[in-house]
Image (cartoon, rainbow, N blue to C red; front, side, top):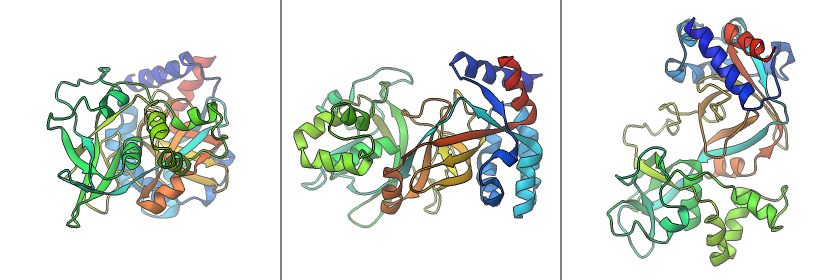
Length: 342
C-alpha cells in the first residue's frame, strides 16, 4: 500500500506540475538500448539503491545486489523489474557538469586572493540570505569564514556552478571540497542573459565562452556573473578516496557518464534514466539520477556528469543539446503513473 501511495504521489505531482503526459514504453523503443554497457549502469545503480525513498525500491535493491555480473544478467535485471516511462514532452535539454581541479591555498597570498567560503553558522536551510553581489561586495569579510583561497574569480564562480572540486595546494597536496549550503536565491543562467542581451547566440554560448567574455571584460564580466544571485558555500571532504567521484545529492560518489542531475519533482533520486542526447557527441546510455542542481528544473531536463579535470570540463562545457530522457520505474509505479492521467 505504501509503495502504491508513493507511486500515486509522484504521478500526481507530475500532473499537477503540468506534465503533458506520462507514457509507458517498451525497451525496444529505446534507441540503442541493446548496445549499452548495462553492467556499468548496474554498478552505479547499486551505489545508491539503498538510499532511494520508497518501499517498492527495497526488493529491487536486494535483487540488484544478487544480479550476476555479466552484460546479459545486468540487462535482464533492468528489463525484468522496470518499465521505461516518458514523462513530459521532448525535446529534453541536456547540459554537462564536472569536478574542477584548481590551484589554491589555505592562506591568503599575493596570488591567492579569492575566498571560498564555508557555510555561515546563522544560515538555515531554505533561508534567503545575502545575494551573490552582496557577498562578493565583502559582507562576509573578516568573519573567519574563508575555507581556502583561489587565484581566479571566474574559476571560483564556476566551482560554485559545479558544486564540488579538487583544490591543489602549493605543496602539491589536494583538498576536495563539496557543497555545504546555498544562500536561498534562485539560480539565474548567465548564458541565457548573454543571449537575451544579444552578446551571444544560443549556439555560441558555452561555459568556455562565458569565461572568455568575463576575462576580456573584467568590470562588465563581474557584473554579468552577479546577475545570478545564487551563491554556494563549501566544506572540506576528507573521507573521499581520490579514485571516487564527488558526492552527489544522495550522499554518495557519482560516476562519470553514468550519473545525472535531475529535478526530483519528476524523477526519483536513485532511479535509472535512459539518456538519448543528440548533438555533436550523441549519447545513448543508461545513467542513474544521483544529483540535483539549481538550474535543473523540469520533466525533460538533465545535467550529465562528465568526470574530473580539464578534459571533462572541456567536454561538459559545450553540452547544450536536445533529445529525450526516459525514467525506468518499478513496474507497479510505472503503471500507476498512467492511472492518474486517465
